[in-house]
Amino acid sequence: MAVPSLARAESLAAGEASRLTQVAQLVTAYGPPAVVLTLPLEFTAVYLRQPVVRWVLVVLGAAYVYLLLTGRRTLALPRRASALLLLAFIALAVAGWLVTRAQGSLRELGDVVVYPVVGLVLMNTIRTAEEHRRAWVALLVSGLAVAVLGIWLGLTHQAIWTFNPLVANRDNITFADPNITARFLSICAAAAVMLYSARRMPAWLALSAGVACAVVQPMTLSRSGLVLFVVSVLLGAALAVDRRRALVFGLGLVTVFALSTAINPETRQRALAAADTVVSTVTGTAHNISAPYPGTNQDTFALEDQRRYLIAAGASMFADHPVFGVGLGGYEHQLKTTYSRFIPTNIPRPDTVSHTAFVTIAAEEGLAGLVLVLAFLVQLGREAWRWRRVVWVAAPAAMIVPVVLYSQFEGRFLEEPYLWLFLALFYSALPGATLLRGRSHTM
Image (cartoon, rainbow, N blue to C red; front, side, top):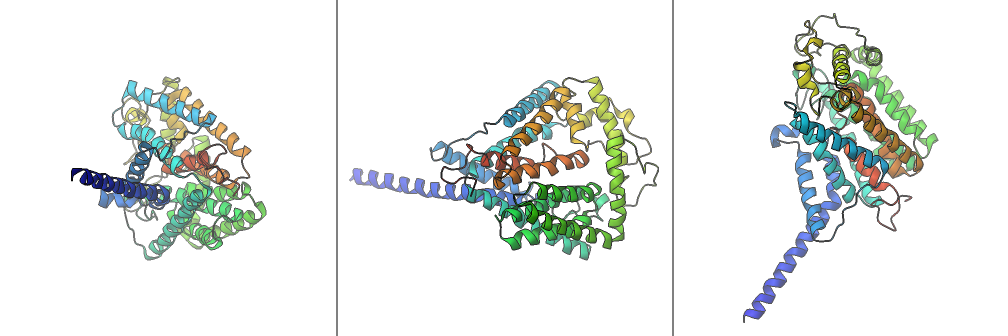
């Protein structure tokens, strides 16, 4: 009697394992689009202690590890020179942190260590042309949803989340910072142009997402966004498969964006100030440093004015520690202590976080880190250029450019989750990477 019972138990165990495998396969198939859809929902941290996307990533990661351990999936690594350069930078940054262990730098360490793992999981769970398509559809859907919500919030003067009361008059929608919202909208609009050109998405989705992003972008009142939205869209058109089709759509979006900016007197003024932001970043000169301090619900001193001393402090750190810098995450602590002389005394709420990514890297990782990052970006561009006619390669590569540009005004480069999403999509789509045989990127 024991033998049948044992056989029955083994059969039940096999059935449970089979069901678990099916669930894991379903999660790995649709988990990446779920990650893309939930990435903008930073406000959910108020209710879930962490943004909801992190919980989605935990589930996706667990499903992938289960399939990996049971032999149903394999681990693919990006075998490209650019990936090796990026890995070398990460190793340098972690080694620097182990030496310096700057106060308050654990978050930066977590970003540098965890985000590459997230990118690797996404790369290994987005393998086929159809899976790439689902991820991009999710990006456009999220862009459309956030933009439509932003239009409603802007017109009704409401807010889902006022993370920073000083920018409560600006449209941050589901993000903590309106400047990060502007970056997201620019990326989605540029992606809409490229995917519409390649005819890889429903035309209505690409058109509506692009137009909605163009309308709501000025409501963020982001100076950098007012410049870089146009740059991002035109870049997407220039790198598109069908440039004529993309250019018509791109110029249409720029026109919608210009009209949306011109209608509102406040956005018109911000557009004029956007030029000062560019000049300030390039020359290090200020324009409004003597302006009176604003009211409770207005911006602090113009970011380009604060950027002047933030850049100067970073340059001084680099000059004092030219080879390996002050260590990962050490910029803010050094500014508050050793380099506090750079903080103007006439600013009531001085910023102590660098908003210029390359300055941060130079200050924290020195020349060694800066050279590695620049070499990584150059090599990435070379690899992308070779396969520029393949939309699944060209699109993520093109989206990395706005991330880099925005990070020179608003920070968040290596700690920007969209950077790692696009790197995962890029490396997965390259020939000889993880796309399954018989399901090529020419689809």
